[in-house]
Length: 187
Length: 206
Image (cartoon, rainbow over all chains, first blue to last red; front, side, top):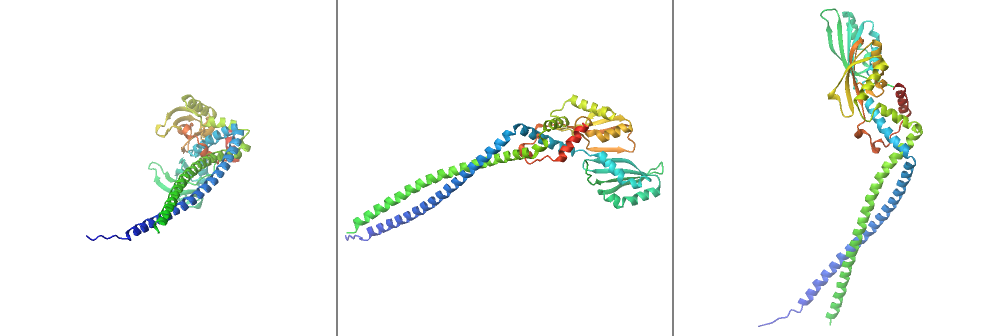
């Protein structure tokens, strides 16, 4: 039997091991550099955040000192502002009907001699229903003409004639208007 | 002979590799620790920033309003408590309706609670009132504060003749604790001269 010894086999194994050792060393060295740089960044961030935190603590302390020196007023003003906000909110639920009624009387004053404001309704969204009564056909026509003038239209966001009727029993004409009055500055 | 030199070289490389492995493990440990510390400081900074925002808002509120309100704030708070009481009782309602009658010369014939519109902050009442034209006109003019507290009317109805008996819808308010604003909400509020004038006007009417 012929026996052969491969003299290069040992050398090849050594070469492969050396190759892997070199690669491992390079990779681990790369990881080392990466972690080292990350460490520097983390230390930097830690230093800056800590510095910022110290500044914030000083700031907080000074605010606390100011509030403590105004403790009684602080309690009162907190209560005041909360309640006053509620007052403002609730006042907005009011229709301010009387003010708008006076305003409507003013708007329709040019035709007050030929028409009567028989009913007026308004809600807190300023939706209005107005009923005007007239005695004659001519008066009714004049009122309709007046409704198309800027004197009326400038004071409403929208306005429609929802009903125009003649009473059966009498010669009375009635016009019902629906619309939204423009916002009035109320004291 | 080359073999002994190779062994030394291998051993040196192995040690170097082991050294780097341990160094890396150590650095990772330090980095994780530093990272955790950074997160901790960041969280604390965030928390303090939030509390500073609140304190700043509070301080601004004090600074903005101290000059205008300092002398009168307790009186204004009492006035606001009268307008919007912290609780609602039957006797408070009756008392304000009586005050409304006396101030305007009307007679409240009856009242009914308007349940669909009544909430935990608002009592909606339908009043049947009787009185002279002047009395009813006075009510229309002064209902908001002449009952000794805030009253609003969401719908206003008026006919050419107001004499006799008529129906009038009013709302009475009281504070529901959940409606009281927190410091956050009131933060930048500044009370203006107009607001103070409004309170003074109410104080005269109430």
